[in-house]
Figure (tube, rainbow, N blue to C red):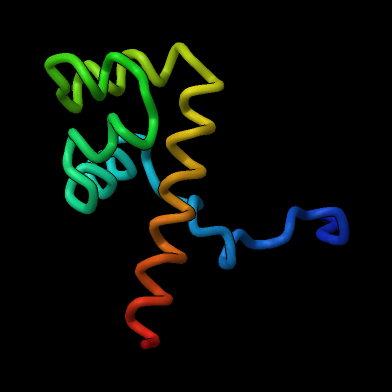
Amino acid sequence: MTDHTNAPAPQARNPLHGMTLEKIILALEAHYGWQGLGERISVRCFTHDPSVASSLKFLRKTPWARDKVESLYLFMLRDVRRSQAD
C-alpha cells in the first residue's frame, strides 16, 4: 500500500512544466527574433551567429543564463496574455 499524502502537487499552474529548453528558445526567437533576444539577454549565443544548437549547448552548461532565458519566457507569456486581454 502506497501513501500518496506526500506526493508532489501537480504542475498544472507552472508554465515551464513540460517545456523543453529548445521549445523555450524557439518561442522566444519567434517572438523577439535573434536580435531582440540578444538585446534582452546579452550572451554570445544570441548576439554572434545565433542558432538554436549553439544556444542549447551554452544554456545547458550555464545555469545563470538559463535562468534568464526562463524568466524572459515567463515575462513574454505574461506580456502576450496582457495584450490579448486588451
